Amino acid sequence: MSATARSRRSKATRDAHLFPTRPYDLVKEFVVAMLVVGILTVLLAVVFSSPDRKAVTLAAWAKAAPNDVVATATAELAGTSTSAGYGPPYNHAAPGQNLGPLRLQRLGGVRIPIDSANDLVISPLSAVTGDAALSVALRTWRSASDVQRTTWAGHYADALAAVADGDPAKVAAGTYGPVPILANRLMSLARSGSLEGLLTSGGTFYSSDETKPLLLLTDGTYLEEQARADHLGGDQWGMMNETGNYPGQPWMWLYTFWYQVKPFSTSTNADALVWGLMAALTLIFTFVPFVPGLRSLPRHLGVHRLIWRQRP
Image (cartoon, rainbow, N blue to C red; front, side, top):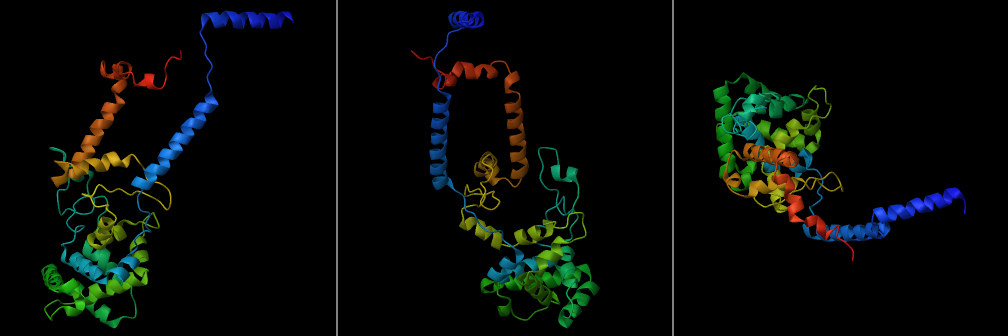
């Protein structure tokens, strides 16, 4: 044995006396961990899996629920839809969410100005050519006063609500102006698949801005009905955030959890309250290592001993 080898063995012997050692099988631990995690993943996916639905398009909406499209178009024209009265960042119709004295939506301002009647109904219909009845209806609508437009659309909305299934064919004659033609043509435009393109190509930097199609879709009842059928309603504890077959973000459960309990579940200001609570919790988690007493909890609880324990 060379002098170098003897020196290394001697040093290893001395180190063994100074620093206690024990055998450790890293490969075994890795395999066990992979098996446990794999089994848990499969079991939890079976029990808590979320549905993987195709995206709901305006064309699919119009084909599945044409009456809902007509009713939604009428609400946009009447200024009674959710988006028309939402407030910032789309309009000044409402103060929006607040956190105590802070008017969060007003502070953000109207960054995406949208006139629901014009941008979601009249503007896309104006791109249609070769329809004489529609052209007359558009001219009549544009030449009328705001009060007259609201009156026409309000009367037609009431008439739709009064008939079974909101079927436009069952609505009695009335003073609706050009609203029935406008609403019906928007439904036909949506069914053809053209409406989606007209609403997404607004001349902005982004060639496919989905803001307007989403606002129009969510102003109707079809999307909510589909969500509730899959137990994804706000009061059903459901959650789905997927792209294709890829899993959603598991961290979102904590965000959606708060919407199920009071006072958040009964508050019209829930979005701001949940946001404020999550911001506070995030700050607490961030500063845990700096808070005396709190940062010592892991050592006192001793959870680590369940994993790292002394061998006999």
